[in-house]
Image (cartoon, rainbow, N blue to C red; front, top):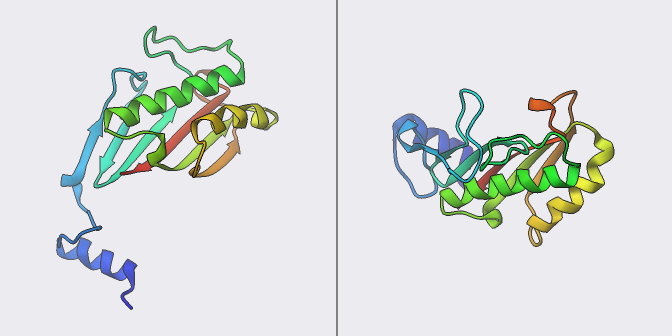
Amino acid sequence: MVDQSKLALTVLLCGLSLPGFTAGPDDRRVVFSPDAPEAIGPYSQAIRVGNTLYLAGQIATDPKTKQFTATADIETQTKLVLDNLQAVLKADGMDMSHVVSTTVFLKDMNNFAKMNAVYANYFKSNPPARATVEVARLPRDAQVEISAIAVK
């Protein structure tokens, strides 16, 4: 049996190209959606490497008005965050079914059940792996931020 990690390392070091193994900076591509908020710093909405899309964390910013919904409740913020992630996925020909992992950052873990109820509507079958953590503060004092990884 072949050790997959050793094979991947060999492919990377030798510059080989094998099905299922993509490596190297040439495969790196920025993904941008005009239907999601622009980055508020030196980062991209998403980066595609091979079949994998790494999505930056989204907060509840309305992409049309470019305004952060500071006074919105956790449910409204969570919905907008997930809608923004959906827009970035769509820009790369993907949808929520391609998401394999998310990280949810909550300002207050007491809001977990409310966030989770909205989140469940976006991942009805085969939900992705997820980590949820409480943080001291989020950009623009958001209540929730979610980042994701998707594979096509």
